[in-house]
Length: 85
Image (cartoon, rainbow, N blue to C red; front, side):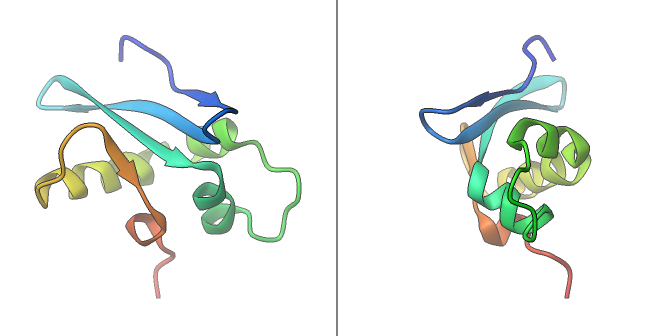
């Protein structure tokens, strides 16, 4: 990607880009969504680090949303990356 993912404290979101057919698609995911999906018992998790550790799964969720008709920028929500049951 041409731009690295980053955390914006003002919006409490991680912004990132996913390559889809060679085209970068902008997306974001909230700090709370990352926390409750990946570190629900931790009080000091870093949203950018959490995104980086789970980028494959999160990027796949963006592609799933796009395939279902979402438009850029894709804003991931809790149900988009919920834990497997």
